[in-house]
Amino acid sequence: MSKRDYSSFASAAKSRFRHVAKAVGFEQITGVIYAREQAGWHEVFALQASQYGSETFYVNFGICVTHLLPTEEAQDLRDCGLLLSERLANVDGTGAFSATSKADLEQSAERVLVQLRNVALPWFAQRNAWADIAAHYYACNPIEEEKIGRHSIVYGADLRSATYGGLLLKAGRPDDARRWLLEAKRLLGLPVYFTRDGRTVHVMEKFARLQKPEPREIELLRNVCATLDLIESAGPGLP
Image (tube, rainbow, N blue to C red):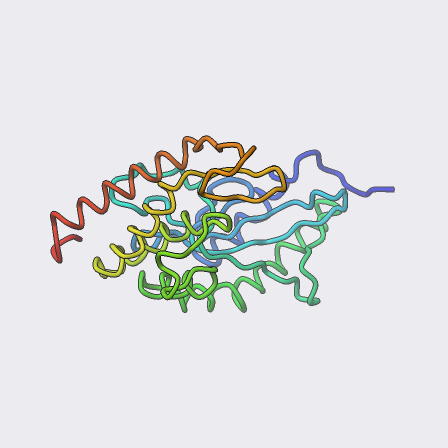
């Protein structure tokens, strides 16, 4: 029988992780999201309750950028995904931390604090400049310089190209940013068709169905184009 003595994981975690956040210099945003603001980005660790019925939770940590392209509106930190992320392992080597009861959650909070200090803080220290963030983003995503002009939208290269271009712009490399933003513009402008046999193609085939762009894709294309215009007009002086 379950020993769980709380109704809401977020509420139970909020009071038990407040001191954890303070100990590593993070601000408690919600009961499950904790952040530390840097020079234009946030370092974040977030608690994720298990969705499989077991009374455990995970701790994800990474880099969050609420405002990447200069023409886009800033996102709320609570709604912003992590550009770079890792999952904290428990001190026993497993990925999950126990949350069976309030007392159990308190013990887990102390274990999380140990792992934040041993693992997450050194990880953040290696990503403490826009150039570092851009380099790590490129290294862990399936986009390649040699494939510019040949990437496929099927695996999300449109969003990744736009993101990498934005990171390069933040890192003070407008010429490199321009190449990747042009790649994002190309991909976002391609028509997308779904074929009967489950393929995604950009050239109309018999019986293929045209996929209407989602609002977020339309907005991303608008911001990519506007950012390219800024790069062209400002040249090397673009901040």
